[in-house]
Length: 407
Image (cartoon, rainbow, N blue to C red):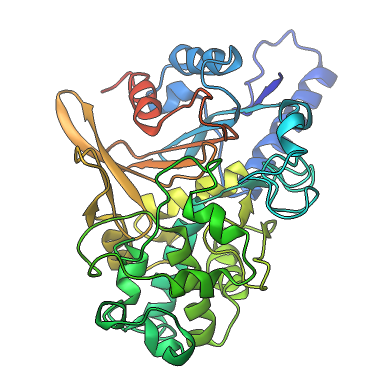
């Protein structure tokens, strides 16, 4: 297991430093700074933004010790600057060798294909690059582009009935409840469809695992019978976001990947990505996107800045607020809430309660934004078996907040 750290270049001090050494250090320093800025991120020391390097290093050492299972990256940015960034190497080909070769709920169709979640050629990195699978954080990106498309007049009102984009004659189990199903219900996971994604993904009874074995994932989801009236309560449903992706293509007349590239990635300077497709050909809007850790941090920073990037409004401020605002309680205890494909939960600073917002992706993908602290935290990982350790968002937040020296 190895790590690498990105931080601000060390200053060169002392008149006794030989000129050539000073020059080489200056060149290296400028190259580091320009490289960070070219990616849209200045780099700084943790102390410059009131964070304890020792406390952050302690988290890093716990990751190295395996306390949180297979973590692939850990990044902290505050006041728009990356102040801590670590990457961890794991031999996933060896770690999941046995699972990769055996049929199961996470080995979909051919074992060499992109839906074998133990296949190291596809997961968690795309073909040995630094592009990491976002899994369901893809849904948060889809939410962002829907908000952009609505503002541009390219996407309909969220209260538009879903069936208006389909021929009801070829949809199964149509009743009055399904006729009342709207785009908003899909976006907030309050669709009311008969779907169970609350068991582990290795369980063949998981609705996602059943859907993944079919050819047309949109048709499969929309054909399901209704379990309750739409809008009554939250029930996590990955298939709902696939329906949204299909509707997006119909409404805008543009493939959603092309639209995201033009109206979201280009303004953020995101040049390299991969977006997987469903067997039917649709961009996999529920889990198919791959980004680097820094580019994932840009998505979180964009929401932290209320849709602004370099002085430009990329996402309407009102949409950011609406997306992050809790729409439904996401658990029985009321600790987590769900908005427009963004989760949220409470945390404490100085005995004051604040709300954190984050995406959640299978295996440990967590872009986290803490508005009151002007902070972004990003974790990626690949803990995909139910018995593996995990770095949950609430613990990540608690430990990073504890590193603040000026709180």
